[in-house]
Length: 322
Image 1: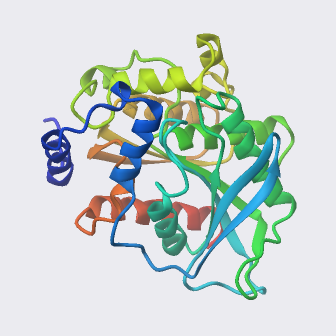
Image 2: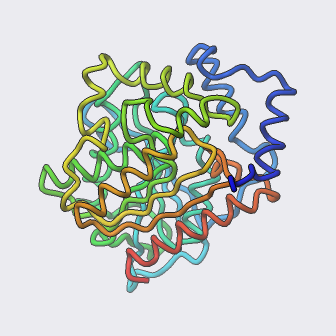
């Protein structure tokens, strides 16, 4: 028997319909960015955290802004903290540091790690591979020089760095893992992938089953891929579509998928391919959830989002030896 949509997800979808929120693909990029901000940034809730610091590094084509989240319990210089390079979702074009502030705070506190959220260049102003190169540059920088200006006596352990993200951010995290392998570093302990986009293709069963009506639509994804890629040929590149890559010798992965999500099957397929290549995988299945539910954390009634953070944090802890 098919899993039913969770009541919280169903309520959200009804509310968006009643409010007349237009589909993303029918909006301009600027308007879609505002819509995404309105949906993901809480007006009256911000999870307490030890410290938040905005930093900036020099990237391959200009400055890259990052936001560093230190967990409430801080840590000591005698026990350097593991770190997660977090790449926000939003179809490579819509998200930013603000849309995923809630998720970054929650992951830092739950996992007891330092989360470094990367404000990579966005499409269409900076199409593939620019966002990916920014994410790789941030990761390499942190591994080479983990001496961030953090709270008193807090240090990052360069040997315990993971990469992760949701949706398009998951695609970028996997691309960074591939680049790190192909360019000889840095070493990474885990890929943390939340409903990732893994192939420039729209031929899976989940794209048919969930084409419309579940927040992210097939038309949205076709539009977002068009914004991200300069040509369809770029979509065949393994750094853009990791399902087309050789996946040997990648770090262990956590792959979270949702039942009512057009991207469900490509996330599952990526996990299958990793296992076939001998890479350890932990699958987190949320069959009653929709794409994007992790960004609902600001609403305390969304217990499934909090459950997902707990599951992800557990894998991060395992990867970092906690």
